Image 1 (cartoon, rainbow, N blue to C red):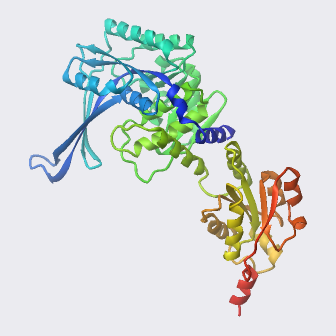
Image 2: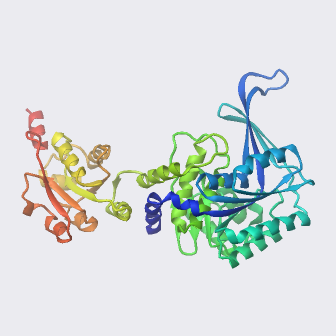
Length: 490
């Protein structure tokens, strides 16, 4: 969990301007992604199929071309190596890919340009057609490709291999590229074809999806533990440094020799198009690692980028400002609920500390939330960046207030508190006082109402011992749980 905390914090504070230093060779299968839009208002009289009245056409580089586009959009430099056919689709793809700083497209007259055509009515994809060859490229074409790669390799600080199984990345080529990169101390990231995992032996990071991992290992992958076991099996067998497993709506899993991290997906209200999301993930991993980010940080950024991509139509790119905003949202939603244990609170506090944020603590029974409570919470939050509320359990309230209290159960009280925008976490405690919590979390600021004396505040002397502040909040006259209950019982 420490690595996850570090990854979240480092990603939230990551300087995206550093990505301009990235120089990434992108090698593999380039695809012309075509999108034909239209409307459907009738069924064909010839067969029970919709009739699409087309009204718009879009095309963009897919496959390794989409990896390059994402690297460029993030400010890095992509050096693109791929094969196109001697056809009009190849010419179109070459023109579309020309926005990349360095493009090396080899024309192979013996094979067609790979084209994926998607027919859509609104956001609904009706049909996809694939025009392609999966035969291996010839020796002559392969030699030209490897020569280009070798010339550019000294100028790069990461390599991405995008294998869509179209015959461009031959087994001998993969071995040569990975070996050469190792000599230059350049990380190699692979978007794999599920049946060819042995061909990527020695790669730095490999990014299979769940189904590819299942096909490669023959293991069931229904939970985190099974994902981790399968990932370790594959990593050990083929000597990868790490696996980053894309799990769709379940996020990412990072598997290394020593650590396992499961990153939750960044939730979106809508998922518009999953086309190319894997390209986006590996592109962000590559640029982040190439400028010195550690793998947990790179994975958090990549996870964020994947969520952005699926929230856009078509084969999408991600921009730096979007990446920062979404990584911050993952940081603040890493815990599924504001109601948490002390240990969970400590994980969040560790993130806040790394970001240089302060947090305050106050506590109480909060049996019937009233203006006095709101004032206390507002005053506390105004003194710090984050607010943790300690909440007495039902047993604790009964011991303090007597039989018949609390009026509301602890979970109900916690849910009311957690719904407030200025409350970041709620921790329920069973003791009579919050001293144990205070000693564990070590708040920067401890706040209680002005009906207390500073010397009488539980935990006050401890907080002051390490330089923290103890503050008395102004009271709102005429408001207390006891008064409200007394008036209601008349």
